[in-house]
Length: 338
Image (cartoon, rainbow, N blue to C red; front, side, top):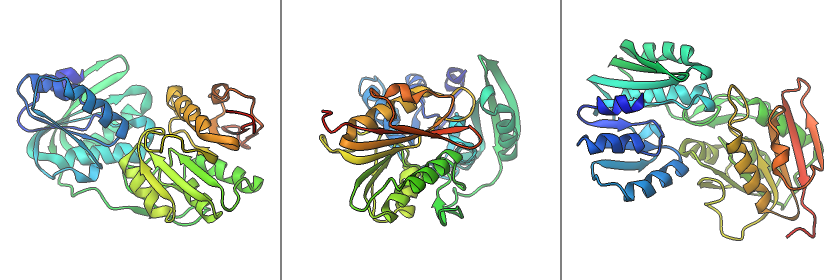
């Protein structure tokens, strides 16, 4: 269905779909110039590699925040809000799509039925004066929206309170505006177990807006935090001063042989319909690889998702939340492990 949107592109076009630029290249073949804004380091790298082999120079790739969209600059915008990353991220994508359009422009928005399509269609109608269905297939629905309502740029970081103190997050960051329950439970377990000690080297892998990184900094640890998403990294820098905060997928942003006493992981896709275990599995694999002998890996999971199978030794311990929704696993790497 998105290919249909690519074929219908007109004028200056912005691709917000986070699909590694492959839709943009389809339109580029049809002599439509497309700007591709990618918020993910992994998607940008994939798009950059593929673009090197493309036979069109009409596609421009940019790695950055949704906050950087040029207001009212585009005739066509494509969006596929990543609903598996939460309501705040979806809202940011829809806002950016409306903000980028000229008054006469049109947006094509792809929504997934199993991930809140009915609710998000209402949100689309709040951003545009005219919205109609353009197709349904395979659990997805494509909307064509025109008449963007006047909106300004995305807001700056939102301040909010948590049990662990006040925090800030940009709109495009995972769980912006609240502490997600998985992270909250992992913080409780780490605190009760006194799992972090002053001077330890800690890596918060997939740091989001940085609640775990900040907890580790406050414990006196030498903290590295990293995330694939631009807005998450920008938010973490606000919340965890003193941490080394890096933008990159998995461990691509680390030094080749760098290792840590403790690795903390709160996989970003562990709740909701159609859990994508492959994302969490790769984080766990990479995290375990970077734990030095004698070090520890802590992972919070949706209880129904068997990430424990992705570590080559038996967990040293696990704790289930009172409501049964989440489990925190703890692995200790043997001193002899190489």
